[in-house]
Length: 116
Length: 114
Image (cartoon, chains in turn green, yellow):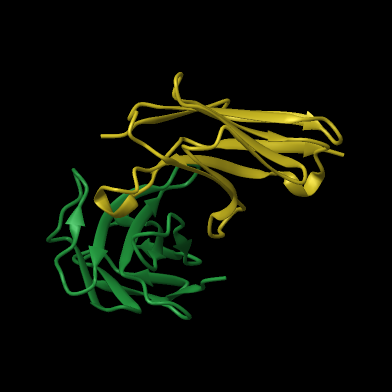
């Protein structure tokens, strides 16, 4: 099956710093990647949708200047949390789709971000 | 936009019993309905999915039914085992728009007691 990796798996940073999370599709070309945030005991909430070579589309309420998404290639998307605060602490999960005719999304293992 | 409601939020069953989780969706144009199992700290795993041109799909102990008219779909797990204990999420998407983005239900914590 299609495999998606994320790096790092866990990160702890100080308040006010920025953190970059990488999402890679290892054995397929992800024309579309999605970024989700999941708080403890809650559901996955879509943050943004990104397509290779174009600007990401952010969901309502998600600050695009705070959560910078870059989808530079068909196998790599990055999420940068800028000026992180403790309330940004969460589980961040990415997923990829390999073409528009395929319904399924392939999820990465997630990144646990803790902001102190 | 799409809204997905999932019930119950928690479900406790004895090993060997059946478990049923129900979801309703609001967008009549949604045409893809996956179910995911998520263990603590792990990624969601697709366990079964159904498309709008099908009313029911089964895979061993797991089945999903879809009622397009009523806009609801259900997950059925038979002969439950302790390893089925996890959080289950339903989701809905409309493939033709927004690149098929998924809207998730709130989740159901399933506990199977030995």
